[in-house]
Length: 453
Image (tube, rainbow, N blue to C red):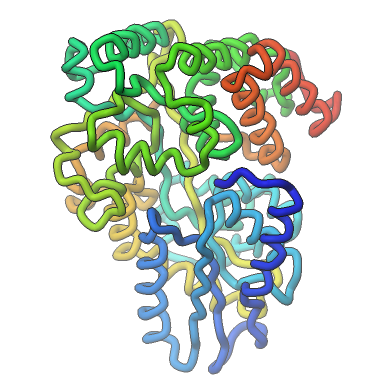
């Protein structure tokens, strides 16, 4: 996640495409073929690299003469997606298998980038082990499967017990409304002026993290009824009071100094400070983040913090006024997909199934703090005992929401991020930012593609 000009982004992405491997040469696959695999790798996210190296070793051992060419891309999630999109557009650069954000699946299907896996999963015995809801992450509008789920997640409030206790807040903490959050933030600010009471991401710098870990937690808890998208009409929602209310809450957090300063919020690496510095040093009361958070602090994690299990607590993010169902969460997740232009479709699918077999899926769920998508993994004692927060973050599934599975969504998401940025930087009022968002949505989806909330 990086703030950049359009020209810089395109130039960097185009250069990156040159290093991505193209498809292999022999349809169906035969001895001597190569399966190229592309995925993201960062200093704070190495689990996928380890998983892919393990799968490569297993696959090559069982496929004599076949080579798996791993091509990790060191980039933020947003830059990775940009580079991947450019590579998928050409058969000369498209990888055979790639790591795909679930929110990109529908748009990439419509673009013709993803291989239809429907017949292959139909003949794959392990497919029955995958949770029915998780399967939908890789489905197209035609109901066919185009990607295999790697794991899913939820979002909850992570809070530092020491900071809250010092502020006189009773533990375990579970706010019942937005007002409860603001009241707790005020107590923390008063008792610990140098601490950040309650951080929520905002702006385009943190990309999809802004909406999934912040804005949507608010929007889907307003009682507005429709969130971003009205499933019944198949149209995007504009004119939503819930949208304005959500921006107003973010404005309050930032104007009152409860969150990080706006300049820090616009830094795409602010999350590293949150988990690597502020929580361990007890200078942050709480933030909203994913169920994968313990992977940052566990032994071997990039921000290893042995005391995290004792120092941290988890709470559901509340609805606006405490109305039913009482809490809100968002779920996403990543998948594995194969290029529609691959010359080795069978080998590509076989490699994907190696990555997500029971043993590897268990390792990944435990080591990347994922919510398991395989039933056998979800029932495994090793998974259930992986960290002290497994039950709490899994329980959040009962109040979770998913991003609209619509090809317009990526653009809509950016428009929502821009609205939050305009508000926290004082460029627009919540009402003005919401109106600008509505205009952007109409341009993206057309007047016939919107409904008034």
